[in-house]
Length: 308
Image (cartoon, rainbow, N blue to C red):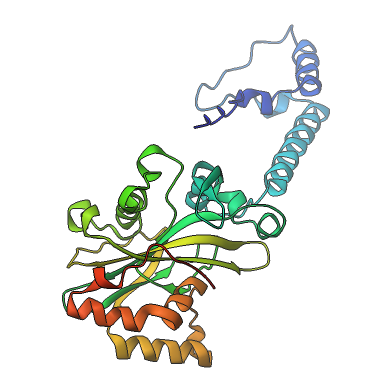
């Protein structure tokens, strides 16, 4: 894995005393060298009595500080995606997604940031492995989440229990029995929803199929994923992480159908994620039958990659 570069640390005094202001201060002090020494005030900063500073020196120092403040502000505002939430920025640049071809063969890795830039999705191979968890309680209600307002892609949309990516690391690259994806799902259920690992053992996730889709988010961001659909039936403790999740709720079949109706009608500003809608429209309700009958493994088809 590539190491992260160390951030350069600058001496804060270099932002205060530049060459021009230092010369001006030196001339000012020399002009009254025969006068009694001024008092020094030792606190978080030092100050000389205002009456002993020529106006020109103060003007020079003020101009210097103003210029540096403006330059710093300009640099920050010109930085790419300066308004991005700090947590999401860290994840975007630190997480390395697994790049795959359309047959799900690993072909490399790339930052989460680059994998979700719509321009790169359209012009390069940014197809990456993902997973979508559908968690049901023992009353056979499906846990949904509303993505947080700070999410880079599809903020504030409602979606299935958890949607994320296995990362380019040994434990999440394991192909046998989809173990790498299961490990990633367990990790992200804790990160996003505070669900302890013991509540969702990796061997309880049932992979049902794979879905290949592409969807724009807001013109700048989007998704191009080969998505593993993981089902699990467990009663769990949920403690949502506000950086990731705005809201959660369990729904039965009828409640989900009402949610779909509102989204289609544009009521209450309600929106659904594109991958969730694809699963709902093509698979979910027939798989829900298997959830209730306890026959999910019979519905599993990991040989097929559905291109929707």
